[in-house]
Length: 311
Image (cartoon, rainbow, N blue to C red; front, side):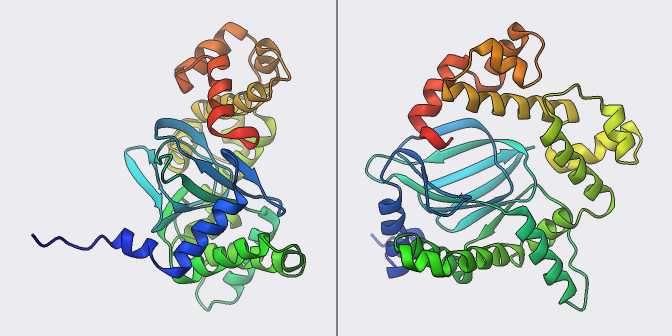
């Protein structure tokens, strides 16, 4: 019986793809997130099959070299696998699932954007084009892994294996990677977020402020006033960008920050709750279990087991 060829299998047999996977495996010998010599770059190795996991990524990009992930936000699926990468322009809480196994672990490169560098490149890209770069601001975008992106990721991993090459070329390769993402299919949306224009731009500014003040008392009316919007308009534009209401977003941010603190085991639950803005440890525990579907202590064990020390 004739069978159709498996394009992903064929892709995985290409020399470049084999080298990407081999290098990532060497650079990520440990389960969970592995640090690299470049700030903002880490490599994940996991054998776990995961379903419905809450995540909150910082702005940047995720390149899955082996295995498969997908994000779910407001009914939309964002695929990031061996054929696609995920670009994150603003932090948005979403649910994730992934496919991996002991025989074929998931290997992924996480690049957190240097926001100053990204803004500089965005400005240069816009200035160098006859028509202004425009796009609806979106928190997440899934894009096909084009050869130009794959090439720079491969050169980045090669440099990470060679201290001299990394010292000489690491910074320029990382700059090129920022550029390739910003001129990719999602570039207009990401550049719009970086340039913070219009109403969506004011929401992006509001998100940056929330990142700095999430542990303080938050008043939506004050956020709306700072953004120059009415409260109803602020709610509409906030949800359009993040998929959450302002207070749901703040709660998710607090809980994700708390999750990392708890996993490090250097504070009590009550201390963590207070440090992220909860007046009531009991309310914190209820919200935590509702969001992660595990108690704080259970989640700490899960994080250390699946994500390692750099979660």
